[in-house]
Image (cartoon, rainbow, N blue to C red; front, side):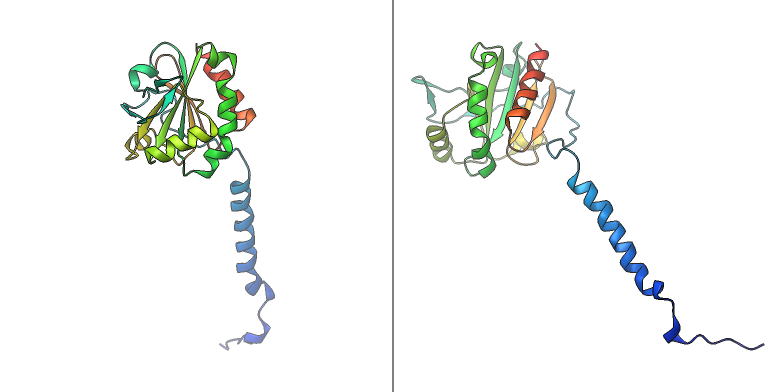
Length: 197
């Protein structure tokens, strides 16, 4: 029986192109997944659950209308009204970008009339820097709790700052926005908070 030898110079061009074609198809699939969809919607196992236990210290030296700004804890979050909890830091550039939106939220009738509370969780920050940040840009928060070690944020499943949570009147997490708020996202979260009342 004779063997037929194949001349290596006569291989099909597909043999060489197959890896490139496969790589190209995979790149397209990953690209579609990466660049489509809402990046602020990161799945959270905490949606629908009671907010994890948190007891934060107030931001030392922070005042509003001549009075110290209090911290907040779970008792405040389950106090019978919806709350927006914004996780922020003075060193966070996107926090600076979203801050005018938070100032606008603070001026809405819902927040001014006390239907929805707007509070801040200051994440891994120096007190002086946090006070300077709020002093320069304004303080939209009725309460600011300090999470200096980042434990509270870990318990809450924070991926990075800024993030904003909607907490229902019973203390359950209703929604979460990852990244800086824009007007549309802020309005959506505020409406979600108002519906929970």
